Image (cartoon, rainbow over all chains, first blue to last red; front, side):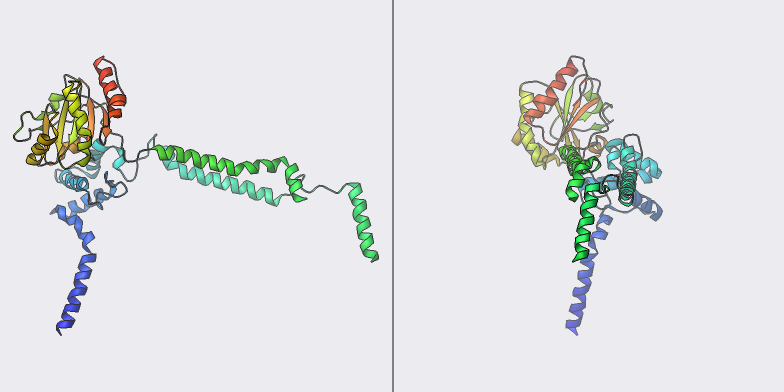
Length: 161
Length: 192
């Protein structure tokens, strides 16, 4: 009986260990109002951690990410709407903190680049297939009269055999 | 036979250059991409007035730091902490600047404990004119600080002219920061 109990305790502890990363964020005190907290979380997910650059501040354990999470919560409790709270951070760290860069003159190439490459790829494919299906001029030249004669002789030889 | 045909066909000849062209394009992207420094995020505060702040001194050391202290003369603001290892590497350079009285250096003591900071300054020397103790790191965030050490060059009007990320090396001083200080003092502009 004790054995069963210990075994199940072990399983429970293992599962608790697995779920720890999800709980880690809760260390810096979620807001009391669940709606405000949800907004804060949504903003956290949009902001890049400046220390470990490919994580959002929601996912990062860096001290600065923690400070920024708290700061976003403060802005929201102070009455900022989402846009203003994000702007507050962008004013300090630039567009770079946004995981999704805004569409601007400077980032236009970034946004239309994939479309341009797609168009380029389609154009190359169309040209390629046209070339392949249409007889390429000059690639198959008609036989000269000498070659015609030679071919005739060869065929005649074969027929005689 | 078929090779001969291709050779005679001028339309096909350019196809041989395709691999070379692809290699050049990839090479070009790598050349630019590998020389970028993704760890150095350009500051949005360049050209703007320093953020509004008023920080107390580290207890046991006179002279705190506030926005108004940064106008009137060209100065450097060095963000440092006793827990920051690479701050130790750049520290002798600031000691040297102070000893030779080249340009005033102010400190922003970022998220540090006051006793640890004082001990650190006792041990490695104190080159700073004023030091603001930013215990919570909130002023650091206003300055766009994301890694310590960082060093800002502020002009006489209290505007941020440039930001150096990471420890300052002798060549950074000689080639970037000090020429900029000189240019600003002559009344010119500087970029770095």
